[in-house]
Each structure stands twice: as structure tokens, then as C-alpha cells.
Length: 107
Length: 124
Image (cartoon, one colour):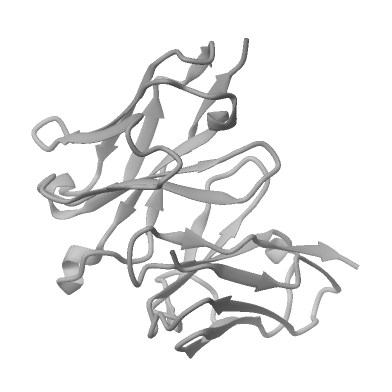
């Protein structure tokens, strides 16, 4: 199975900050990586697929990068609505696997 | 509007069974692969099972293999998860999630639509 490791697990930041979350795969997954945002009590929302392709309607302050084993999710200027938990997920092969999550908190 | 609505959750004793359903609307259900993903209380997301658009390909997480069965009825635009031999560690919110991979002639993709979830509690 492909293990997905996210860091940090918690991130404290202020509105307007640039934040970066990293995700590492235990083996190469090419660009078959998705990023999700989840708020408490809500279902996850797909932000990015294929490592860097922004879903329709997702603000352009969100950006994804990387390929192979190392990936990043960057929020260029953190907004109040962005405080949430973020997950990466590989879909290179089954079993599909998620990272452990990164909680972005208000500093 | 794309909608996925799960139902069938509840409280069950260890060893018991439940059947979850997911009703789809607002899109051509037979054009999409589907998944079940769960989230234990206070924990992260865990993929449970996948079924291709025709039902020809099915995958399971090792943690549920042999106990859970995924199925779909394209005519009724519905996805199902039959859960048998339930364990305390199966306690979670269960989400159905749409997979648009067929649009790119692939097996898997990011899951672009999710239901609101249904809660399964396994306890004696």
C-alpha cells in the first residue's frame, strides 16, 4: 500500500499569511494526487486534482505542486474561510490512501 | 445540482449488520465510479470501497475485506454498502463520494462530490 504522510499536523497562522502544507508518498504516484478541505461536521471538498489542477469555483489563492513523491498545497493569502483541515489523497492505485490531515488554526 | 444523500446508519451491536444507501441526483449516475469513505470520531479520512461505473471492478480496504460488500443500481441511481460482522472500530461517519475518473478514461480520480454522511455506531 502507498502511505501518505502530511506535515505539519497542525499549523497556526494569521489572516493574510502564506501557508504551505506538504504531502509525501511512500512511492512514486506521478501526479495522481488530490487535496481536500474539510470543516467541522461537514463533508470533505475537493480543491485540487492531478496535483495542481484547481477545481472549478476554488479560489485562485489555493495552489498545488509537485510530482513523484513530494507535493505541496499552498494558500497564498490565508482568509478566514480557510481555517479547516486539509487532506491529501493518492489515486495512483488501490487501495486509495489519505494523508493524516493538517489542521490550519487561527494564530 | 449534484446531490448525494446517504441513509441507513444507526447503532448496532458488535457482530451485527447494516446496509447503507446513497441516493444520487443531478448527474448521470452510470457515468461515474463511486466510493465509500469513512471517518472515525476525531480521526482522519479512510477509504473503504470503490465500484466502477458498471460495477465490473470493485476494490476494498483490507480492514473491511470479506465483511463489507459494495454494490450499485444504475437504474435507481443508488449506491449501497452491506456491512456484516461489524466491529467497534467500524464506528464512523460513512460518506459516499463520486469519482469522475471515467471522464479521463482512468480508473481513479479525485472525488469531486460527497454526501453529508451517515453515522454508524457499533457498541455493546
